Image (tube, rainbow, N blue to C red):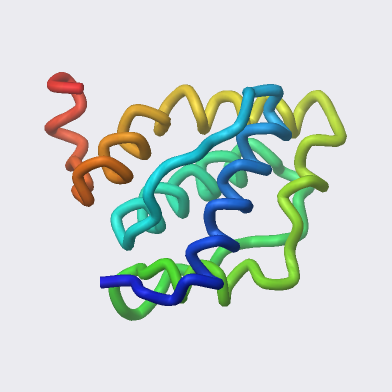
Length: 120
């Protein structure tokens, strides 16, 4: 289980910034490793929409944790993603696709498989 308070706060701020960059009111939820896994999927989803985007997230060789995700994007600011319309729409799409799963992960510390999508 994830216990580093500073990394929890950093991940909360990253997720909140991601939502705000897409024009959403922000995000506040409980941070755990399931949230880190879902947020990584959201970042990857947004990245797929950004063809000219130079930053890419490498797939881990071990399970995704909050600490690992913070380490991966330590020098990256999500605020840069919200500057152009194409980038904003990629963020919006990622939020639309993954928001329910992120909220479930924050509340119950679970990650649903794709087969569970219809149950959301």
